Structures are given as C-alpha cells and as structure tokens.
Image (tube, rainbow over all chains, first blue to last red; front, top):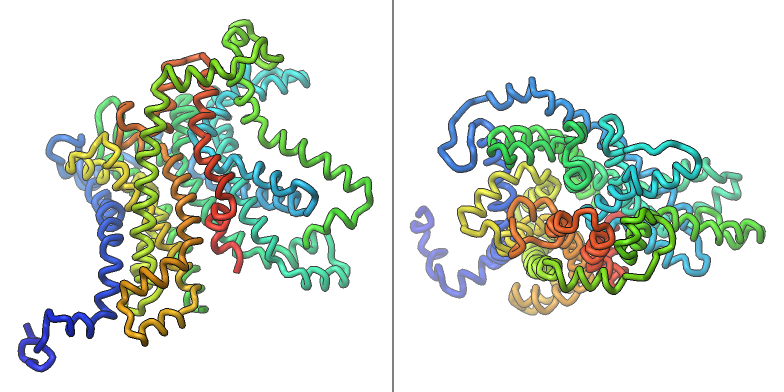
Length: 309
Length: 282
C-alpha cells in the first residue's frame, strides 16, 4: 500500500512493463515455486509436525491428547529404546568400515588389465540391488540348515551357527549384510577418485622413494579427500537409515535384539497392538536430533566450500 | 597411477593378479550366486536335502514361469513401473527448475533455500512418517500409487536440486549473459539454452532416481497395503509368505524383483556412476 504514494513507479503495475522490470525477481520465484511447495509440504512441515505430535498421545484416529513430555519420560525408562540406541551406535561405528573396505577393493581393482571394466561393474553389483533382496539373500546365506555359510563352516569342521537366531550375533549379521552394498558404493567413489589422482605427484613421490602404505597415506589419501568426505556422508546416513534389512532379516528379533531407532519407531507407531503415533514421533525426534549433528556438519563443510568459490 | 601398474611387475605377479580377480569376484558375489543357483533347481532338490549339489534337473523355465504366470508378481512389477516412472519424470522436471533458479540467479536467501533442499534430503524417513501418512490419508490417497508418487517426487526433489544446481553452476555463464543482452526471455533461456546443456545431468538423475525409487521399501510399507498398489519390494514379502519354504520360487522371485535396476545400471552405467560420484573429484 505504501507504493500507492509513489505514482510514477506505480503507473504500469500488472502490465508487461512491470513484469519486464521485475523479471529478475519473478523468474527465480516462479522457477522455485513448484519444487519448493512440494518439498515444504512433504518434507519441511512434516518435520515440525512430528515435533508437535511427540507431545501428544494419539492413536492416529481419535482426538490427540496433550501429554507434555510424558512420551520422552517414558523413553528414558524404556529398555527397548535403550537397546535400539546401542544398536544404532553399533551400526554407526561398524558401518564406517565400508570406507576402508571400499578403498581396499578400489586399490585392488585400479589396474588396466583386460576385462577390468566388467569386473569393476560386477563388484559394484550389490549396490544396485534393493536392500530387500540383499536381506533375503543374506537370510538364506546365514540359514542354519542349508545356508552357504554353514555349509562352508561344516566343510572345515566347525559346528553350524545360527547367526540371526542368536541375540548376541544377530545385529552383527545384519550389519554385515548392510556392509556388502555399502562397500560397493565406497569402492566406486574411490575408483573415481583414484582416476583423478595427479600422476606427476605420484612419480615425484616415487623418485623420493615413497611406496606402499607410506605413499598411500601421505600422497594418495590427501588427494582422495573429496571422495572420502562423500563416502563418510553416505555411510553415516545409510547407517542411521537402516530399516529394510532389519525388517526383512529379523523383524527386530530375536527378543528385540536387532531393533534400531528407525525400526522401533515404525513398530511403535504402526504396531498391530494399536498405533502409538505420539510415542513413535518422540523416537523419531531423537533419531532426527542425532542425524542433525551430522547434517549440521555436512552443511558447514558445504558452506565453507561455497565461500571458497 | 596408484597402485603401481601391474604391467610393470614380473610375469608371475601378473598371472597371480589375473587369476586372483575372478576368485575374489566369486567370493564377493557368493551369496547372490547361491540364490541364482537355487532359482533353477527343482523343488525335489529341497525336499531331498540336495541344497548344494548339482541340480537334479534344470527347472529354470518352470520356476520363472511360475513367478510370471501363477503369482501376483507381474502386478507388483507393473505397480513398481507405474510408481517409478512418474516419480522420475516429476522429480527431474521440478528439480531442473529449482536447480536453474538457484544456480543462475543471485538473490537474498538463495544459499539458504539451497541448504533447505540439501538438509531435507538427509533427514531420517521416520521423522516424516506419521505426518506424511496422515497427509496422504487426508488427501484420500492412502493405498494408491499416486499417494506414493507424490511423496517420492517431493523427497527426491531435494537430492535432485542439489545435483542440478551444482551442475548448472559449472555451465559457462557467459551463454546466459549473452542471451540476456539479446533480450531473450528468462523462460526461453531455461528452455532453449540451459535445458539442452543439462542432458547429462538429466540422464544421470533419471537412472539414479529410478534405482532409488524401485528399491524403496519403507514408504511402500507405510503408504500402501495390497497387491493393487504395492511395488515389488513390498510385494516380495507377500510372495514369500505364499510360497513359504519353496526356496526355488522365492529365489526366482527375488531375482526378478532385483533385475530392472540392474538392467538399468548396465545400460546406463556411465551416467549412473557419474551421478553417484558427483563431487568425489574436485
């Protein structure tokens, strides 16, 4: 309304001239709008709503009842929540083994012998398959009666072990299944990185007598830093997102020993014994806050890079 | 090159290396090869305990035939196609525009909006689950493919915007400047100048999003229920319940479910890897 007092800039409002003059503001706005609306409606607002729901008791159908921090208080004494949290930590730490694992295979395959391209693709294979199928494949692999693992163990005289039926082993069994595609992903990142390593620096280092591990550590790895950063990002996110494998391989069992926060949340919110949306949302909030630490770190790194440009 | 090229090594090392690769590959893919072998065995092999011996007969055609003609598998596959393809188109279209807006124009809050897309792309699905399920129910789209597609488009837009924006940033900006000086309208710049240059990015994102969505399980379970709308990742569990202990059929079903993204990967390998490794090289 204040612009109404400035008649000369106001003269052709709405006309083609107005559009022309403001096109550098209008154009990005219009290009952004459809994507941003979708993203805000389906991603940003739901995050805020989940925070809100976590303060309510709600079965998903009736009226939500405000309970304050009761859901969080319940979490603090919930054994299953504690087990899930510990398992998330195991996932985080062990999943990071995918990074050295991927580097190792990448170094092994970084040659130019005949047919190497096919080999690289086939090593990458596990990443392309859905986690559901990876889960099924590994469930059969571990099967105590006919699984390949126990058939091999039997061959060298070790009595069969029921990996997924043993509460102390099951989580590790699932994590190994998860590492399989993740190592493949890290491998492809490092293969790409190794391709771009500066050959002159390597030659110079060779003349100085560097080789093997020392060369890797002091000359190669510093040049692979962008690949390592991305491998770190995708592995952390993959570890905290683990859901499919647990759902397929153990369904949280035996005795709830393989639950992680993402699975426990799903179980609580949509369990067959009645929906506990509020409690589920509280678990999701905890998971989100853990993730937020990493997200903040990633964004901070990206921001530094942006400023560097 | 690191490690030292194998050609410069003694002959013995070369031979060892060349024979080691297939062995390593066989070990690496062993769990999968086992399933492939299961899928061509007759059911009598399983009842007689011949799990790892030579198949009594080759029953590959019969097993895969059953999967395709006597189960719900074709419906699930069709659902997956009808969920995946619209998502790819939608997410790529939306993010081409957001990427263009964020990559070409300088305005206040540009970086913040960009970071909103990036950050949203990293959040755990569970923080979205209850509200998104609720929203889908309110829209009357629960247990429909459309409900799933809308969410997938929205979520994938985050990742795709990151990709598109960085790609557009690397394009020669003088082209756009020159067009502006000529008085070309902004949408024409987008459509006739930038979009044709973005073909590699569009190809890479299409294969990536195809694979991500085809392989999605969590949202399929949260937003859909029956054979009329569930994609193959969720359908395979019902399939397995139907053929419990029929390992030859479950194996064949799993392989069928896994195949489309695999085919996509081998057909579009270069684009796929270019997409995945974006940013892995400075």
